[in-house]
Length: 135
Image 1 (cartoon, rainbow, N blue to C red):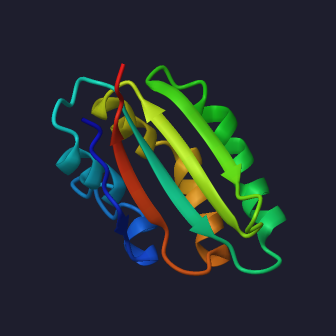
Image 2 (cartoon, rainbow, N blue to C red; image 1 turned 135 degrees about the vertical axis):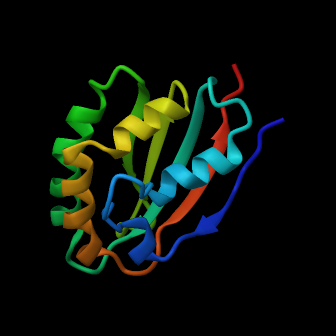
Protein backbone atom coordinates (compact mmCIF):
# COMPACT_ATOMS: atom_id res chain seq x y z
CA UNK A 1 0.00 0.00 0.00
CA UNK A 2 1.32 3.41 -0.89
CA UNK A 3 1.46 5.73 2.09
CA UNK A 4 1.08 9.44 1.48
CA UNK A 5 1.46 12.39 3.70
CA UNK A 6 0.40 15.94 3.08
CA UNK A 7 2.05 18.45 5.33
CA UNK A 8 2.45 22.19 4.98
CA UNK A 9 5.60 23.12 6.83
CA UNK A 10 6.14 26.73 7.76
CA UNK A 11 8.63 28.18 5.31
CA UNK A 12 10.79 29.27 8.23
CA UNK A 13 11.10 25.69 9.48
CA UNK A 14 11.62 24.19 6.04
CA UNK A 15 14.38 26.58 5.13
CA UNK A 16 16.03 26.87 8.52
CA UNK A 17 19.73 26.25 8.28
CA UNK A 18 21.19 23.96 10.87
CA UNK A 19 22.53 25.97 13.77
CA UNK A 20 24.57 23.12 15.13
CA UNK A 21 25.58 19.55 14.43
CA UNK A 22 22.71 18.18 16.53
CA UNK A 23 20.05 20.02 14.52
CA UNK A 24 18.35 18.06 11.76
CA UNK A 25 16.78 19.31 8.56
CA UNK A 26 12.97 19.33 9.08
CA UNK A 27 12.43 17.39 5.86
CA UNK A 28 14.79 14.64 7.06
CA UNK A 29 12.90 14.53 10.35
CA UNK A 30 9.61 14.21 8.45
CA UNK A 31 10.95 11.45 6.20
CA UNK A 32 12.31 9.50 9.18
CA UNK A 33 8.93 9.72 10.91
CA UNK A 34 7.06 8.34 7.89
CA UNK A 35 9.33 5.80 6.20
CA UNK A 36 9.00 2.47 8.00
CA UNK A 37 11.94 0.62 6.46
CA UNK A 38 14.81 3.12 6.43
CA UNK A 39 16.85 0.88 4.11
CA UNK A 40 14.34 0.94 1.24
CA UNK A 41 13.77 3.55 -1.46
CA UNK A 42 11.24 6.30 -0.89
CA UNK A 43 10.03 9.33 -2.79
CA UNK A 44 8.72 12.73 -1.93
CA UNK A 45 7.29 15.78 -3.58
CA UNK A 46 7.69 19.35 -2.45
CA UNK A 47 5.31 21.83 -4.06
CA UNK A 48 6.29 25.49 -4.14
CA UNK A 49 4.35 28.56 -5.20
CA UNK A 50 6.66 31.33 -6.36
CA UNK A 51 5.95 35.04 -6.09
CA UNK A 52 4.92 36.69 -9.36
CA UNK A 53 7.97 37.50 -11.43
CA UNK A 54 10.25 35.17 -9.46
CA UNK A 55 10.00 32.16 -11.76
CA UNK A 56 13.28 32.63 -13.63
CA UNK A 57 15.22 33.31 -10.42
CA UNK A 58 13.64 30.25 -8.79
CA UNK A 59 14.63 28.00 -11.70
CA UNK A 60 18.13 29.50 -11.82
CA UNK A 61 18.57 28.89 -8.08
CA UNK A 62 17.65 25.22 -8.54
CA UNK A 63 19.99 24.56 -11.49
CA UNK A 64 23.25 23.91 -9.54
CA UNK A 65 21.47 21.75 -6.98
CA UNK A 66 19.75 19.70 -9.69
CA UNK A 67 23.05 18.97 -11.38
CA UNK A 68 24.92 18.12 -8.17
CA UNK A 69 22.16 16.04 -6.57
CA UNK A 70 21.80 13.84 -9.64
CA UNK A 71 25.43 12.81 -9.11
CA UNK A 72 24.86 11.72 -5.50
CA UNK A 73 25.20 7.93 -5.16
CA UNK A 74 22.01 7.69 -3.11
CA UNK A 75 19.85 9.76 -5.45
CA UNK A 76 17.53 7.96 -7.86
CA UNK A 77 15.48 10.90 -9.22
CA UNK A 78 15.66 14.65 -8.62
CA UNK A 79 13.39 16.55 -11.01
CA UNK A 80 11.93 20.06 -10.87
CA UNK A 81 8.56 20.31 -12.62
CA UNK A 82 6.56 23.41 -13.53
CA UNK A 83 2.77 23.30 -13.56
CA UNK A 84 1.39 23.93 -17.05
CA UNK A 85 -1.82 25.46 -15.69
CA UNK A 86 -0.28 27.57 -12.92
CA UNK A 87 3.13 28.81 -14.08
CA UNK A 88 4.10 29.99 -10.57
CA UNK A 89 3.68 26.49 -9.11
CA UNK A 90 6.55 24.00 -9.12
CA UNK A 91 6.72 20.46 -7.82
CA UNK A 92 10.04 18.89 -6.96
CA UNK A 93 9.97 15.09 -7.33
CA UNK A 94 12.73 13.35 -5.39
CA UNK A 95 13.56 9.69 -4.95
CA UNK A 96 16.37 8.34 -2.78
CA UNK A 97 17.68 4.81 -2.28
CA UNK A 98 17.20 5.05 1.50
CA UNK A 99 16.88 7.46 4.40
CA UNK A 100 20.66 7.71 4.87
CA UNK A 101 20.91 9.07 1.30
CA UNK A 102 18.53 11.95 2.00
CA UNK A 103 20.36 12.68 5.25
CA UNK A 104 23.60 13.10 3.29
CA UNK A 105 21.83 15.15 0.62
CA UNK A 106 20.43 17.56 3.21
CA UNK A 107 23.95 18.29 4.51
CA UNK A 108 25.33 19.35 1.11
CA UNK A 109 26.50 22.96 0.65
CA UNK A 110 24.57 23.27 -2.61
CA UNK A 111 21.35 22.38 -0.76
CA UNK A 112 22.10 25.09 1.81
CA UNK A 113 22.73 27.59 -1.01
CA UNK A 114 19.49 26.58 -2.73
CA UNK A 115 17.40 27.03 0.41
CA UNK A 116 18.91 30.44 1.08
CA UNK A 117 18.19 31.54 -2.50
CA UNK A 118 14.60 30.34 -2.86
CA UNK A 119 13.27 31.31 0.56
CA UNK A 120 12.57 34.96 -0.39
CA UNK A 121 11.03 33.89 -3.71
CA UNK A 122 8.23 31.81 -2.20
CA UNK A 123 4.59 32.83 -1.97
CA UNK A 124 3.38 30.74 0.96
CA UNK A 125 4.46 27.54 2.60
CA UNK A 126 5.80 24.58 0.61
CA UNK A 127 3.72 21.40 0.72
CA UNK A 128 5.52 18.12 1.31
CA UNK A 129 4.32 14.58 0.59
CA UNK A 130 6.28 11.41 1.34
CA UNK A 131 5.70 8.21 -0.62
CA UNK A 132 6.59 4.58 -0.32
CA UNK A 133 8.18 3.34 -3.56
CA UNK A 134 6.40 0.23 -4.80
CA UNK A 135 8.83 -1.86 -6.80
